[in-house]
Image (cartoon, rainbow, N blue to C red; front, side):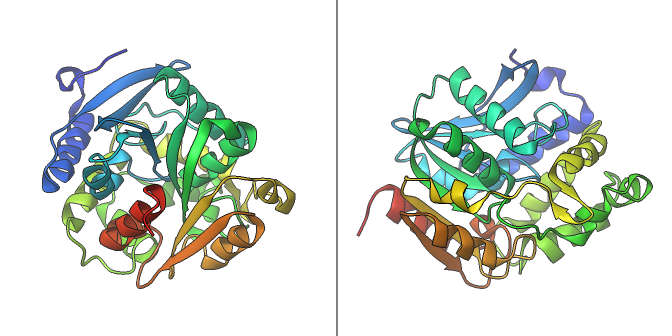
Length: 306
């Protein structure tokens, strides 16, 4: 089912406009569409031609987080960037347990709907967890693989999200009406420094995403499938990770406060054909904080530049 700005409500229109501002910042016009996946309306961006490159964001904001990568890699690939359920301009539907199955089903169904039989792929945070789950189930669907600060590789998870699974406390901690708390999350968890090009535009986009109707409720419900007070519920086993045969580039923010760098070392050790690149002076989302460095690493791996 297609959807246009004409029937966006006020909060969705604010997300749309802030997304357009992010894209305009790097010289891109808006090229978004909607597709229905198992009854859920999913928004996605698409640019360029050639081999597909699927970019999967994490558990916050949406497709706009890849604004620097979309601009750079659309010269070489057909870049496709979905807003996962519960984020961006997609429908606010919470994830069901077990989270790995929920993410895998959504990713493969999205690829099928867009007739993407095989793709290069990048998975950030929750998107990385979904990528690993999909890779274990359908390895032939993927070509070159990049994992960034992925979830699902250790129990560690920020206390604020673990506490949010306590019903009454969760409503206080996950609140769409407090820009101050949202900014604290960005500054204290997502990035090491806010002095990167486009920060204010990214912050506005991330804020607007949280204000879409039913966002906080869907996010709180989703957290129950992701974590408990004791940490992440689903951590990939050693034998699962060791079974992956593909070439994988692992990129990790050296000072990630959401998923510590030891998670990156763990998967790099277990994968048979992988390399680990640490991004200095960077937190959980190095792709925005150190976009030039990340784009360089991605380009070198994807285009096999030696």
